Length: 347
Image (cartoon, rainbow, N blue to C red; front, top):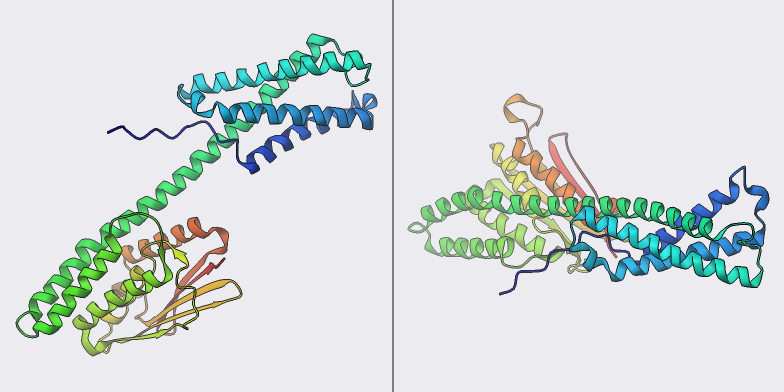
């Protein structure tokens, strides 16, 4: 079986935003040259248009060549590949500038008048190589940063999945063991709920879950916890039928929050309480509210544990990575209740 091909380290320049950035840099160089104090008197509107066209043509030629040769250059070590890419841009600039200089010399245009052939071609090559090196470096760092953020989000999701296994599994198995002889029907239902829960949370395959899948996962968890806590745990859902049930969401968003509500709220109160889950969608925003009675988290003996704080930070980070700046998550305790609110954009 062949090993999977390594991801090219050379930045991808075939995407439209990257092409626009390269063209923007080329035009910026022309504008800077035109505004330079020692050369502004030589620039006319016709020359500015000609220089802009030449710069755009070079930018597109360089971007196209680096796009086509991306995988070839990525086979080299990063240093050697970067030098080869910059050398390639210089060669393209020399050839392009030579053609343009010869063409305008024949036509008698003022764009290259008074500029020697080698000064024009070598100056264009040096400028193109310098700007290309800066752009490639920026795109390379940007790609590495995006890959690191994605890897961190994936690692945090995997860590959260690993966290649910021993903690919840052991408690559930102890509960089922105590029900086997006393109430085998309820024990069987708990086994099925546990099986469905872990099949949904830790099943094969990567990718996002959905709003419906996250709600079903939370329901299965609460069903098992209800067997453990009895009447001390009450659940109240508010979810209209017209919700975007198939809207993609990161896996394990609701279940850890519901688990925190049970472990750090309901289970710490002798009288228990009700967990309220309100889901609404309006004006392109999906809002999820989880509210439960809880003791004061500032009390020394009842402070929010590190695990709960880690879960909140984990979920907020993954929501921000998945939905961008439009995703918001707030949580806090007030008046005997702990509230966690999630807002994400719905396209």
